[in-house]
Amino acid sequence: MSSISFKVTASSENPTKTVVRARNFEMIIDEPKNLKGTDEGPNPVEYVLAALAGCLNVVGHVVAREMGFQLRGITFELEGDLDPAKFMGKPTENRAGYAEIRVKVKPDCDVNKQQLETWLHSVESRCPVSDNISHSTPVKISLG
Image (cartoon, rainbow, N blue to C red; front, side, top):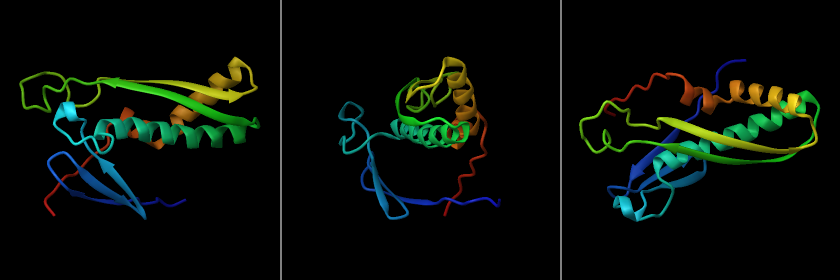
């Protein structure tokens, strides 16, 4: 199978609010008021967590189908901690992004723990968003 390309376009509406278009969908990215935003949408790092949850959901259902069990649904709890020092231009050895992302996955299904562990390992290894977050992906930023 050949590769599939995805593309989004985005424009700044103010210093904290960005409007992103993906196909025929529009997403608002903003900061909460305590970070000087207008709180009109999730912030960029919340979207990272949301993208991970969405991808784990899709892959989770694909893998369950392949393993031959019915997955009625999945709930997720995702959280991560980051040090804002680098983002704010302050000297630090810490990275700008999440130091760690923790994900609790609660599948609604009738399979034993060993099957669930096999399922989860496969889901984690096959999720493109998890792969991008977990491994170095070249990002080439240039002037347009």
